[in-house]
Image 1 (cartoon, helix red, strand yellow):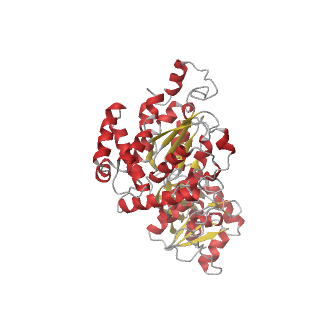
Image 2: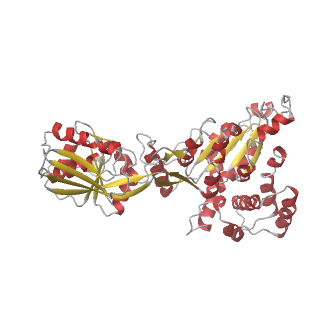
Length: 507
């Protein structure tokens, strides 16, 4: 007898429809799986065999051939266990229900329990797009799968639950999620705790409002890491589409928090400076997302930036420019989204105290140059905002001055982002930092005074064309924060200040 059931496959975060076909025919007992299976799929034979026997069912003592189509695409992962199990029982007539409307995803234990797997969200989305009316998933993945509407997501604990539902004896209640359940967020880190540093806070506000990359340079203990960790508290709330995009990446990587349905808070990733280039971009025979992609729609914070391996730093070039990471292996090419906001922090010299008002720097001029030269010109040019973080004096640190809260700053950021959302409606661009050159010319029109200032500064500080466009985009963001349609002199002047530090340290 022959039977087939629907399932889904995944490569990177790209999904595809899979049909699992089972043929049970006369002949010497044999169990073969074909269709370019990897080791985990081949091992499904033993898990399925033990599950059938341990659940009181009859394993067919015949020649069994299971084909996982399309046969020319390599199949990886353990989530084909459940569709193989169901197709085999259907072919041996132990399941008589019609299965055309169902898709199956799940790994089996030897006792018939259905265990959680990675990548459930993108596979459920694919099942919906392919026209399936219902999809069986592991019970532990119920929260993750329930965010998809338009398809019945049936979380099952055991194969017995699946069979009872198919026979109509005991129906599984579809998982359901309230769309606004994750929207109530509490921030434990607040800019209210940061004393002084008004200029740095302003620069980070501009960065958050326009999605600009930034680098902070300052002596140890001036609050660089402290402020970077609070950046998420002033960034705009994620849209539902952004939550879905980010959750898909975390699902594939197996890093989705246990009780999370969606990643509703912008990611903040802070890899150690010993991370490899593969750790940042992703890798493996079936490449998994790296730190850059895990920061998609959020912040990638790289503290002690010069200390990162040079290959790791240079791997940021494509993501910062194109918003994607492309990984090529013998098995194929995967592109992961990486619309990130890079925030880097560093000391001004190896000892950290160059320019400190009271502590003398012990580094030679050559040592400072070697240290700063660890950051290449192309990478520095891709960072929009350069900020010098000064020392906070004692009076300001111990004073009673009330600092602005993150909520107050975020309100201004949200207003600026709303302007940008309206400006870029109908395009893939979400913020000023991601404007194309054509959009930059269209939306960054300067007043005569502002144009004169930028013209004089272009040659004076040796701008590249890329730096010129970045100043225009930063100016556009500053004008949006002011609620100004036109880009005036003061907007360009502030933007130029954010591009002058590199001329001081990288002469």
